[in-house]
Length: 136
Image (cartoon, rainbow, N blue to C red; front, side):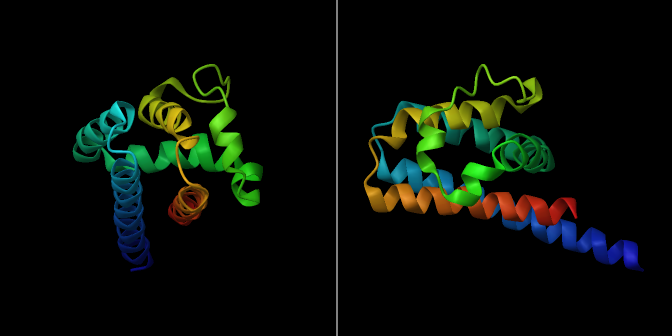
């Protein structure tokens, strides 16, 4: 019985994570409609979400929430604007969506207004916390 409860909780957490990530990508696409990179993220995300949403969450948790815990907790959006994701030795090659998403975000962070940078950081923090709930 306890197993089913955890399974149901994980399904809820996964659904919440995917919804939050969808909202984040939509927000970025609306804020920067001219960004081809963000449109690519959206298209790729839609494909990945259909194939294996759990892999997106696990990748986020491992590659973003765990690796970048300190800048996430500090709300340091500039870290994400400056970091070299493609050459980060800790990011896994299976995480191509997450790596490309942050590379594309990096290109566009400078174009965001201050309030939008804060909102983006809040999404990153929320997604990281949600991914932690899935792992627990």
